[in-house]
Image (cartoon, rainbow, N blue to C red):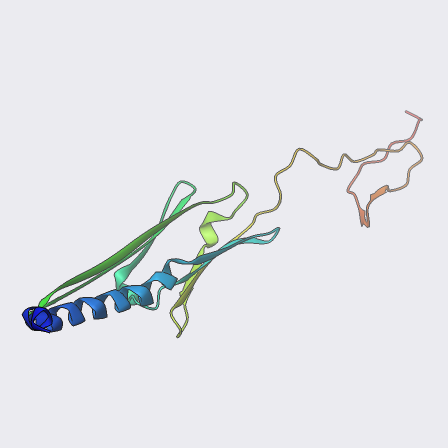
Length: 151
């Protein structure tokens, strides 16, 4: 047992290091995020419970959404720092002027970006008739000008 006595003075040091590793394991789930991209909106949900709102930044550059968090603690016994950066490329059909960001009491940040509509190469072409009545496409009447065969 003499061998273990030589390591006994190091036990508080290693116990402190193990505690730090356990704290790190508690941080790891915050790295998870949830992305929703449907016909109505693009949304991101992040767990930022380990950060104060003033330690977070949300920026938009072009169509790149960046979320950052920085936390630092300095004590007489040491220094602790954690940070994250997440970037998302927003779809082209979102309304960048109406981005909404919120953090709930559980530290869940949500960023919602409404969609402006679908951008596809498919569009309805109005049909003009020569009989003088309105033409509907789908369930909505179109604003068409009707003409008759007489001039």
